[in-house]
Length: 448
Image (tube, rainbow, N blue to C red; front, side, top):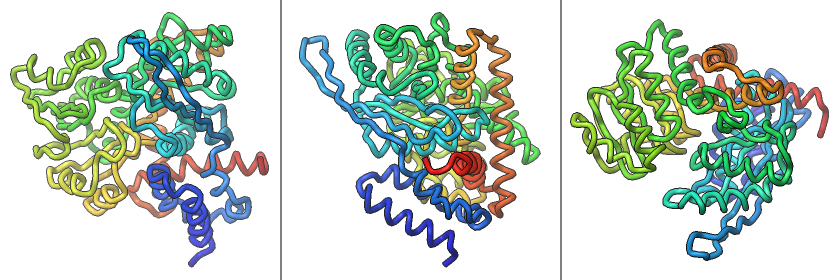
């Protein structure tokens, strides 16, 4: 066993002993470890400085109670989390997720992934993540506001424009960001750069809402161009019907592709004529309804319960935009059998390790989340820049910057994969390209 492999094995054994009940976090670390050995062999100084063990341990993590009052006057209690993973290249940056599944393991997995995603953008932002097991679905605006205010009353102690800058994620959209920011401003005063994803009337950036979905398609476009192909005429299967999926569908159509599906936690709709993103947007963002309502409004659409990945049809590209581990080994094999040649991840870690292995064996090109869905955090960083300069850029200017950033992310991931002998394994390439920048910054700053 090489020194690098032995080092990683020892670090992993120590981590499992410390955190045996954090499966999502351990999976994220394993995905990273499987690709980083050649880098450690080439750079033994990383082993000598014990960079990996330092990197997988958050700089700090907070858990706190969030009491709030529902519309019936009853006191409810949820858990809040914030993990500040790495600030080696800039202030902690990462979203807040409000969903019943949120726990420390999930927040750590998301924060760990965020380190490399943020590094890949080329912008000076570190990695962090947070959230709560609060479920905004079915809650009134008043209940969401009271919860958000209670959540921010504690979180505000730990964040700031040059310290930690949260954004939205699953369950945290414009409404939630507005309530969170209002409470922060009441307690700490006006600091526009403390949250991103804000409304345009109080420091938000044009194109931020569209950024993750648009960025996913810009990454896909760059990947296809490297294979001498284009999006024009391609058929795409999308999961999800939230922010990422909606704007991925829009941009795909603008670039000449046809998106055949959209889904939520209950089921999915299939429309052979192409999903109309405006109808999905109305149902999910305005009415806060279910995706099955789409089939009631579009004659050519049909609704099915279950996972969209268990539905067979011919298509070229899969864009999972729902949640983690939505594609397991069986579904990965089905995707390959349906003829898809590209899977680019709009959600965080949507593919299990078994699925990733099957894609590689089937010659299906995989764009990992830390690269393919980095558009959201990239424009969040651009929002921070605008806030710092007291400026507001046009939609076109932000969109052009986003497209360039996503092209660079693809290029750096592809080049790193080739340089370290991984061929077209873009997961390995993204891990390496993101890690190298953070590792060099940590090495330069000493043991802190």
